[in-house]
Length: 141
Image (cartoon, rainbow, N blue to C red; front, side, top):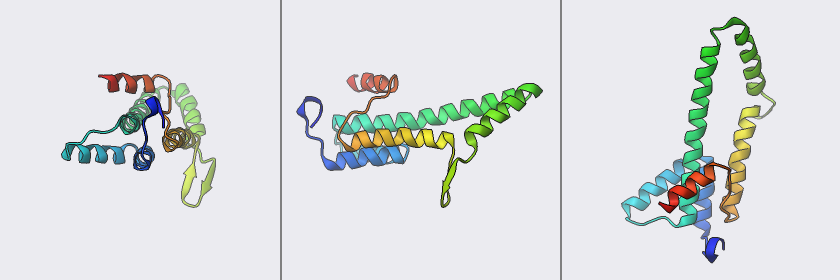
């Protein structure tokens, strides 16, 4: 039980966890199915589905902005070398497990998703500064 002693069902926890690891796709499909059935989502599942979709969009936008900035900075010779070195540090493989290769960026994203998924698995409303506030504000509307 969590906020206001509401029971959180195991299927809601599973869908929330899967939603994080599929970058919101499972949650989006569940939203579509719920809309077709004319059935609303309970607050716990709605929070985590919206959080996973928002996180995936945020990761995409940040990566596109960084790619754009790296392309722009690539026109300046001295800065190009610095940017290349920094991007090489963040993208170089730290370790591999079979065909999976982990860099600093993938470890950060995987760690974030794991934190959110574990919180959802335990029936918690996981908190991320700024992002959780946006989700909570939109849920109250």
